Amino acid sequence: MDLASQLQQHARTRPRHPAVISTTHVMDYSSLAASSNALAGKLRQKVLPANRIGIYCTDPISLAIAFHGCLLAGMSAIILDPAWPSARLRQMLDLFDSPTVLCDRDEESVLRALGQNPMLVPSVVEDAAAVPAITPSDDAQCELLVVFTSGSSGSPKAVMRSRQSWQQSIGRCATTLGATQDSRTLVPGPLTHGLGLYALVESIATGGTLVAPGRWKAQDVSTLLKTENCNRVVAVPTLIGLMLDLLESNLPATLRHVVTGGEPLASPLAQRILQISPQITCTEYYGSSEHSLIAYREHQRSAKDSNPEFIGTFFDGVRAHLHSPQDNGVGRLMIASDFNATGYDPRGPGELERCQDATGVGDLARLLPDNQIQILGRHGGMLNINGNNIYPAEISTALEQCGLTQSVIQAHHDTPGKAKITAYCLLPEPQTIPDALELHRELKNLLPIYKIPHEIVFLSDWPLTNSGKQDILRLPLPTARGLRKLRLR
Image 1 (tube, rainbow, N blue to C red):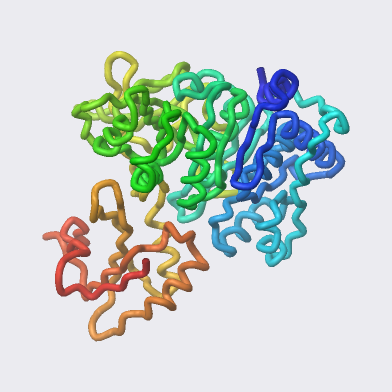
Image 2 (spheres, one colour; image 1 turned 120 degrees about the vertical axis):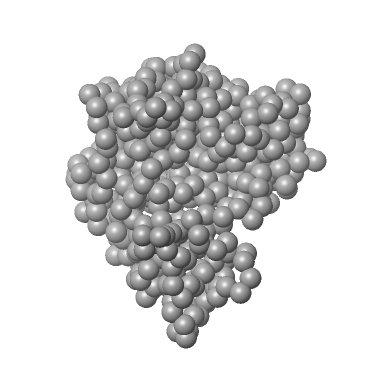
């Protein structure tokens, strides 16, 4: 059954079951379907370029209505990230010729400041009988949404997904990830990022309940987790760790499933999760915006799985082969499955590597017996910092705009599981180090907060190899004494 029909069915069979719970409102399936149908009716009256509409929402209720309104109207949703600085948001809007944008009231002023005339997501419709049901499109191959992933060009890449790709991934993988109609899934982080957005769509497609504050706020997460009897949590490991630090001694007895993705799950954190209760399961999955879900692993109590590389089992229906495998069995991973994205929007950066019906994004892997795979990382210099995929080129470009023309970006771990971004810049003595507040202000206009370096180390010259090339392996640790440093956050 397609996503639109599943929503309509849940509205008929369990109309008063809560679909989305935020910090301020509970919306049941009857109201979600009625609100989405009302919005779809308005959208069908508009002439939209390429049949696309932007969504710029933080509030979980508004985001759920906006997404499903687009779904029922047969339109594609361009998911815009409220964490972007204004310059990045303007760039993405320009890329799509300033599409009509749906937003919640909290985000309206940001769009108007950029010269947009946004369309507010309508209020929740309580009277379902007053709204005629929309007959959704039955074209499974039509575009469902455009999501953004980090790009090696220093700019986010727009990934196009069909309806069928997400319908297939949810249909085949939800049970493995513990998503059922009885799930009350807490997403403690933002919903516009890949993991959170997928959890929202998955929860509603399976008839469960999504519980979310819309962004990480410790007090809101604590309140929702304890008052809403959540039995499932979906989050990047960093947020799971913060949640355990906050609530480990007071977690609800109802918690049964923890699902993580977006960054490696360290063994010590996995063991902390599994100690919550004897009944709890901990599932880590590996995927990408371009491929959706690829593989998963179930962490076991007291297992010696401290290997930083991911070793897991392919999800049902995922096929893989390696390009140019080396003698050690490592090659570039190519994925063929019904979950694959259509590709990148041709007006933006990025080009998928293709081989017949398989695509690749640079993951290095080793295929193992029994339908298993070992993921070794991605070439192209991508860093994964606390659950966020970051390309050094993007940070280097921003630093260059601030007058720091040469930089090397690295990640360092001061404490297990928590990474910091260090930028090494060439600044011969006796040149003066920039002012920290002024530089932070400039970078904040160019980068999301999580991409701003934690600190900058200024070097008079680069360490060199014997052949005179830059030797990044000999860069000093940021904790070394005597360095000229600037702390930005």
